[in-house]
Image 1 (cartoon, one colour):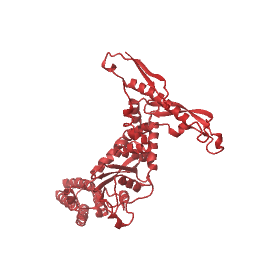
Image 2 (cartoon, helix red, strand yellow):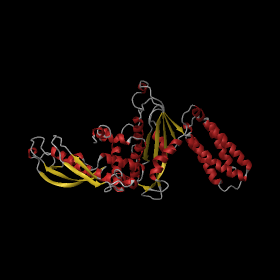
Image 3 (tube, helix red, strand yellow):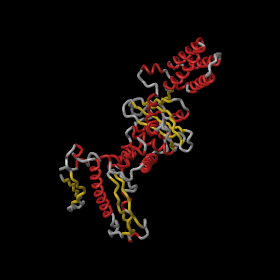
Image 4 (tube, helix red, strand yellow):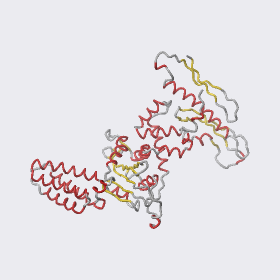
Length: 467
């Protein structure tokens, strides 16, 4: 069976366009894999069609902008320089003409102009840029390039370096859109806040830190802070930045909350591990916000102390039983938000640990951890709540979901187990595209930059006539 694919491009003036054969091959069906188009044949067909379409569109664009807007005289060609337009369906080589400035304009404006530069300044199609940013936010740059080359006819030009450059360019554009002002919802007159519309409900924001291996100082790590904002009704949003590198962390958090419709009279609960950096981030964000030391981190520290208590019990059963009882009472007081009595019990627990006479090899470490636990609870005493009461009311008391967020945002892409190394700038920029990919807002950013993408799969698709 002989298969021929013809392409006809009709100019805007309605004149009959030429019919070109873009692909032809013999298709004999002897086995299952011969039926229909193969991936290689589909790539070749798409690449050929894309090349003809782009060449025709580029020629029409240039011709439509060659005449002077003032006098109508055709511009004089100075020369052509080659460019490559990277699209989803192949890289198209174009000859970009450069025209002299019209004589009627004298010395006003640039001496030459290149019409193609105005429509494709970065030489990459928006949809390809979007797919590269999306895929490279989920998998390593090299893997994203391989995936693109596997399913699309872009084998030439798809490599880790190019993909990385494109992704960082997208992230830099997202960063440029983040304004420097407004670091709080506590603006205006407090009396006016009561006149605001009734908010939809409480928003819970979980924030936590993770660590990424440093490229410059290979034996050290730097901290990234990630978070997830979860309204009662509506989609969640992710947040991520490199601590110390980002100059607008509060503005970034405000931007996420604003995208979810937060206003000054909105109840916001910040669940964190009590770290100073995160406390500073949430300070004075909103007049109706509260900071809560999450139960997950409290129980995690108590569990660690419990392991040391078991070690003591093996050597001194009486001392171990007393310490175990003290820990249980401390946990009970904290669960009910009784910080004063909990701190008193913690102080006694520290003294009991110091009085241990058993020959316990990890005693010194046990004493340090017990002391640090006391400091941790005392430093966050104002953030302790009645966890039992809130838990029975069906409200969140733990940022365990943020631990999952840290894994989703940091560990799975930044390959903590493989010890991948990152620069602070590279990690921070990738976090911006990754968080938007995970919460589904990356596409909306591209549709804002390139409005045509919003209707690409709706209005244009039904116009295609298939015989």
